[in-house]
Length: 457
Image (cartoon, rainbow, N blue to C red):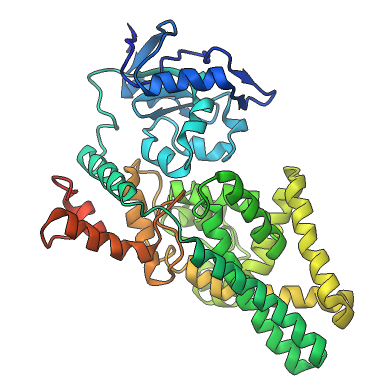
């Protein structure tokens, strides 16, 4: 059912209709809005509940109608009860088309907030895509989702933000970054003073392995835009760490990893659990590949050859080849330039001691040694968890059920993408929430999953 109504001014919501934009707003050829003073003036007017622009009529939609638009070429999203048609714009989405498709026909309010640390800027992209809003009688989320849990989670987020617990400790990340550079420098100094004998080569291989693993954790947090307040500086730092220090594409990792976070352990939307045809995980993949009747792989033995193939070859083969393939096919020239600087740096630093062939062997020896470390930290907390096909769960349930056990394996940020609270802060959060509420009950993920926050505490 589709209805229309006359939008009234002063409700702090957007008044922009289908394919409308603010007066004075322009767009680049690829659809990126170019802001100017006049456009920002109108945006501020709306934020303050004041407006002088003509009132636009918005369509009213029911969930039944919205949920029909969940196809690859027909994608509608609901954000803060507003309905957006992103079908024709999805290819220009900075986070990739697939992330949008994973939430097509659903409420994406919480995932939108988690993925965009600067929502005011992102609103400039959304204005031309607005086509209507939920009808007054419709719930803010689909009926099968726990609306009270969603409200409690949003309230918890507001409390955490008011405590400034999303603000990163720049000193910690500076020391983390300095540690990586010092390990790389130490490896070169040992070669310079003691030569390239076997004992030195083995020792510097372990030093470089530690450096590479720590670079993986640092690029993870900066890739989530979790360190700097401005997305621009997070992206620049991510290029340096992921491309220059590790030799992998930052864009490839972002598109892959963000899909994992928006739909963790949901097949086939989460690429981290889609490891076929070599490994089949969960209940759905064996059925899919069983119909193909693949005879050259004995899947009954995959729990054995995983340790011989999956663990050591994750970084040097699977990730490395996939990164190169994506960079080439999608023409990521900036990433290609940054990754080239990784190999140039290695050949300049280690080439005089090992030659070209020896330096290549050193690079892949380090990746080989790093691979089990990264696999255990990242994959061992996901593979044992429940895997399923799409269940359309609310954002919090999706994240907690599939992600929260990760804190037992590492303390890098991975609970919620975007400017996130790391696991060190979770314990401080529980203490502060206990203090704020004035009683001994703590706010934990178990409480949220079991009964919500109640009265906000």
